[in-house]
Length: 298
Image (tube, rainbow, N blue to C red):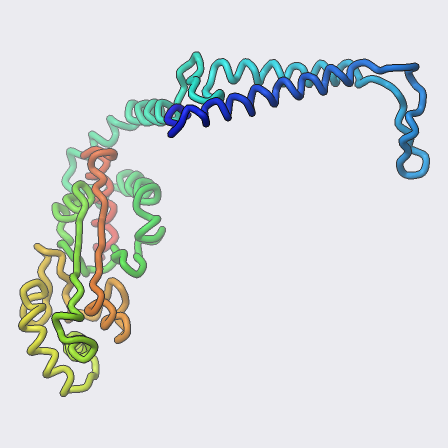
């Protein structure tokens, strides 16, 4: 709460927090005493016979409320809550997170360092390492690749043998450590509009053995060899060095319907796999890579 765009907001929060405590204290104090004779009906009646009497709040009840008020004052002195004031303890969410991470590293770091010394193919057969890798996957990867690692449109299935950048242990580890940035440019204008897109889409679908319009596919091959072969290679076999998908295996990252393929060609695609090495560290990445590698091994 220390980074305000204007000092006004700091004082605004102080006024609400401080004013609220003062107001509640006044309400409590004003109800601990009564004016006039105690036990006399005030004239307020509910449910036919339930009368309000002119009595003060029970003493134990008042004391309980005063305790909560004193606690809130102490809390706002020790912790952030009054605008830009950081509290005497200097507590922050970031500091607590970093401390928890440090405590976890101190407890589990030696175990991950032990795993790091084992090659990934052997580590993929270690039950303890797989359990650790599965938990890392659930925390950092499942949101995109799914809890079962079968992916979703735009996010690869990690259980099959189809890999954009290669499925060797070293390639998987590099992908997790440094991330990947993929870009499929828009080709609609270069191909001459919808007709050119339809032709290339027909040829691309024919590469995986699907029935298409032969005339469209023939025209699409000419355009494919002119614009697409540099990345996807001859026959659409793909290029793992560039992350260009294999178009002949009928495995589709964004969907394999004719409409989706045309959309991909016309509008392009952009995908990003963020780097995890900086905050996970090499040892955890090694274990995570072993888990991912194990998913595609029969």
